[in-house]
Image 1 (cartoon, rainbow, N blue to C red):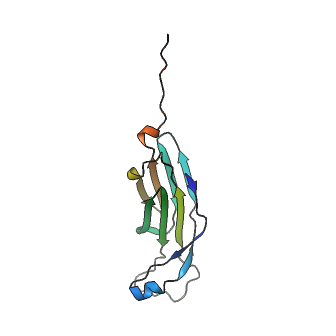
Image 2: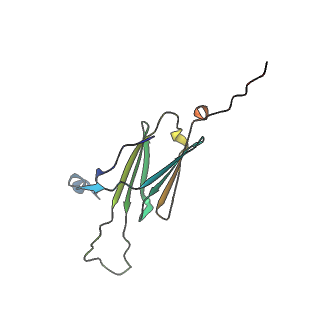
Image 3: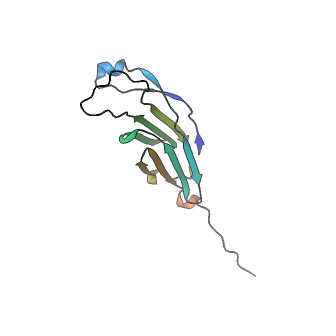
Length: 135
């Protein structure tokens, strides 16, 4: 597995077709990621502060794993934000997965702004112990 994205540009979606044509490009932050590999596969931990499940998208296409998310800054009900010093970031990161991984069995869990992906190896790609017969 290799990391292929440090900083990317994404197009922010818009509500209708007219706005989509004028969607501006924004820089996306590359989230910090920890990758732990063992004989069963890979566990990937990504820091996505301020991201909720409905603003997270994970895709796998042609051996490429893509994580895209948008954070939100909550405001109290009844208040209107007039000025903000900090902009809620967009996150994007891509990884290339080798053929030994079973992309159909990837499990994802988002809790407290931390995404955990379990990417298992295919059964035939897992290491196994071979018994040696004496004689």
